[in-house]
Length: 111
Image (cartoon, rainbow, N blue to C red; front, side, top):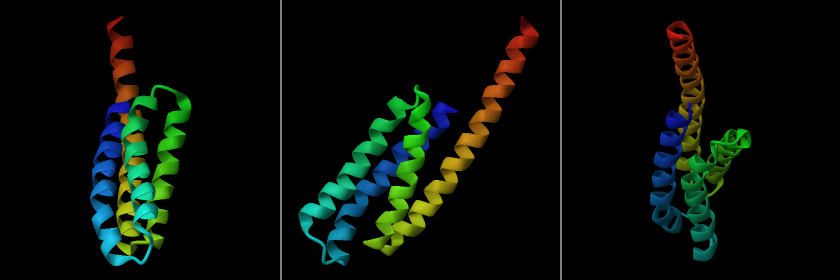
């Protein structure tokens, strides 16, 4: 499950980082605010895969999905991308859980 969730977060960080120039062009928000908000969010998306070893890491990943959707208040396209990545996040968690269960069952049969 961790591998799929990490992949979603890494790609999400790239998208959020690339949204900085778009946000600067389309909004009247200050450059510092946009850079700190989007840049901080991108860095958190990069750091979170390392925290998925801990149970609360998945909660943090879920909060990041909400934060990306909330960025849609500044750049409306980010709301769409946030929903898209949120759906990918849910799919990654569900499919990852299924794969982990299948691996556990296969190793139990071998033992």
